[in-house]
Length: 355
Ligand code: TK8
Image (cartoon, rainbow, N blue to C red; front, side):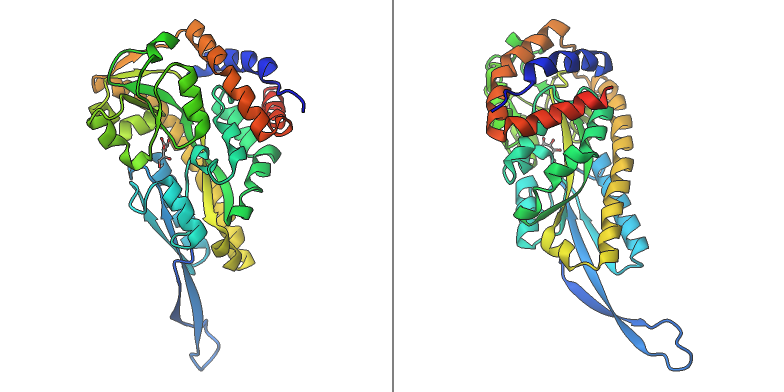
């Protein structure tokens, strides 16, 4: 099998990044007066469908504002024949539980990161390769193009439909032990990671002591010092108030994390063709809106984290290079597991997006 292009790929991506661094909730029939039919006022059964949409982040986060935009578009365009109920802060469970809920029919929409999705479709781990995407713009081009669609096409087998990619963002490290400026500083840190084998192996390669944990348990674990640190974009760190239980933040920018707007396939298949088109277009439009909000937020919140007393440490270019070198064997291993051809298609699309 062809070796992945990892070595050719990582250096330019790193250079660029250094400069850019920077369902079925139940159908209810309601009696609706039929449109004027001249004389007799016949009533027409209009079947209302309910989408129960749950996320793990709180209602201040751009992800929830994007979900409200989805609700607004869908309810307006279906004239209320589809109602969207929104739940935030893990009210319906953590990402894996909510994704299983889509498969089982207990809810219709959730929007997890690609990392937990890899537990259902292992190929999605490629999007969690550290230092894969050099910028948000390149990520948009690749994810919204043929290669991104190729991965979404793997979801229906799991009774899931991926309607769009949204944005979690570039992930940065926080901890309560020490400033992290070099790879040595990772040594022995108990870092919570998402429930994804690649994340665990990557942080082990950096010398940390990672532990997988659902996002819903994270704040308490940081507060009780069960773990020393975690990694998430600045918007999540600030809006989930991690600055209250973490002292140090570093601009590791080690992974660009996409969200995937997931819908239960059973629910999607039960929609009319017109309704399917409406929810598809609404997920894409709300996703564009959410990406914009997310980028504004991430630019602002690093400042706010420092204003809240966190110490900010820059990762030196040399340290980032060393992070790449330490992680390289892990990526080679996962490229073989996922399939080097598929991984090389992602690398090719990233290179093409930068021409
Ligand atoms: C929220 C999670 C979060 C993710 C994580 O439900 O688990 O750290 O980055 O956004 O999906």
